[in-house]
Image (cartoon, rainbow, N blue to C red; front, side, top):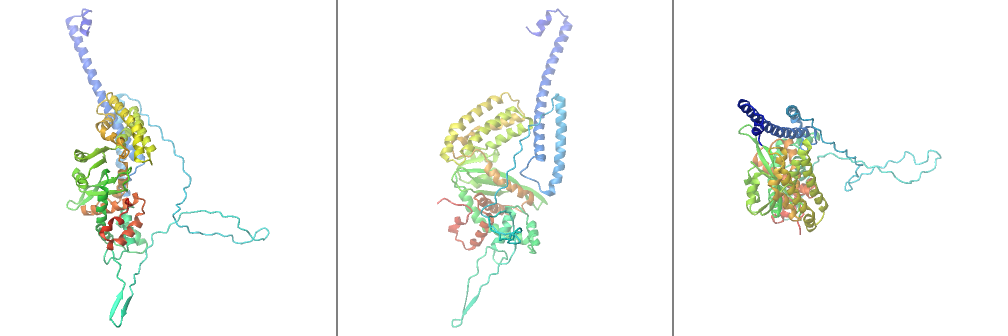
Length: 522
């Protein structure tokens, strides 16, 4: 029985009946409109809450990419204004929706401070003996006998010390033959240059590992009374970059011999002299598999844009599995013989940020389930590929299947357009690529290895601000590839580059692999 039939039992007049039907219809339509408004207000509040949580972490949280001092004040002012604006808008929306105050997430437990760490054993020890002023007892005058020693170690340093190498080549003559004999001059990577290999290595490591602009290296030398003009330092950087190009090319060839690679990209600023400002270029990064037997290699490829054609050109005819994020530029690679692997850390990060922002129980459950997968990976650390494959088949695959079913079921009850819906859709739309790592023990679970390799570059971007030209960016990519690869392999980059620059001028090309900062399998 509908409303009209029920109302007719009271025998109202036709006018009253028409008015009441119109009134009830209006109330129903108003309720529908109100429900729609509440839905989109909830979506807006969800979005503002996420933005506010992100801005708070940017301002108050621990950041891996700190801004340079020159831009810090301006950044803080802008960020503070954004925070105030988001908080005001969020308060208005909550007041309109008659929502209670947001409860912040519980504080993390404080980590107990570790004790003093032992000093590295490989460092040379300089002993300083502190004997008593007298060798006799201050009470009875008898001779003192050594019964033990108290040893205290303190870490010390000798700052960079400049000195001059004098190379003397005696000349000997044969009077009967009228000939002169002398040792041949040692070849140099920069003909006629005043810098020894160690000084050149110091400049390269300072610029590309410690990310110090050349003017700061100039200032360091000046404090020691040595004049090194920036133009001279820049000339050395350019010449060393050219000299190391064959090593960089060979490193890329060896990287492409692997059957699984990580890939990522990060923007850098490049000077655009014609317009008097900078333009955006990109540093593409490719890293070898951390779970296989391949030597650790990181190769940077500097390109003027983020177009996927650059990844295609770098990889060429390479086939294998490629771990990437959801950037569309890589999609063309997966139409051929390249297998797509998706980074589970990206999926987790979206859900984690959502839970941190509003304490979503659904996001918390998703993060917990993903945490179980990472716990299995922790158990597999140090095991063989075969052992890891067995662990994944036994424990990871069932959990992945259960996680997918849970996401599909839960997604039906989540409103479209919100942060939670977007985070869940991100995982579901690429599920095959996310779960593919568990098919064997060779594929990694995430793209963290290459992201960790890029992180130091972000520090350099803040210090050096921009690349002077595309050619300068490509030279920097070669030097960074070699030095970062040395670090990945536990090789001290300064020592490696010094030795390499000493050998490079007379080194045969057929033995170039011996100069690389990696250990190749026999």
